[in-house]
Each structure stands twice: as C-alpha cells, then as structure tokens.
Length: 65
Image (cartoon, helix red, strand yellow):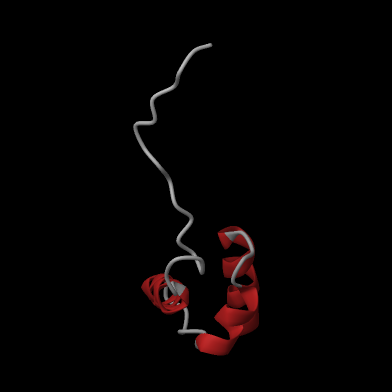
C-alpha cells in the first residue's frame, strides 16, 4: 500500500470559515463601476451570491441598464 504525503490543503472560505459576503459585494460593485455601470447596491448582489459570476453580472447589468 502506497502512502501519500499531503503537501497542501485547500479551504473553501466562502461562508464556512469567514464571512466573505462584504468582500463579494464590494468586488462586484467595483467591477460594475469600473465598466461604467452603476453600483447595484447590497440587496441585488446578496440575492445572486452563489451563482456563477457570469450569471451574476448578466443579471445585475440587465437590471441596471
């Protein structure tokens, strides 16, 4: 039987070990503003957290433009 040595451990920090929601909301807002779109605000972003980023940005841009 081969023994495997672990060289790294990965953690999924999103909502498990840290509250990353404020960082997610801030990052989305910064990206939207950088591309000339208005800051969507917290509630719309909160409603979309967990979806793939492509879906989040598409929904937010559609609602704001």
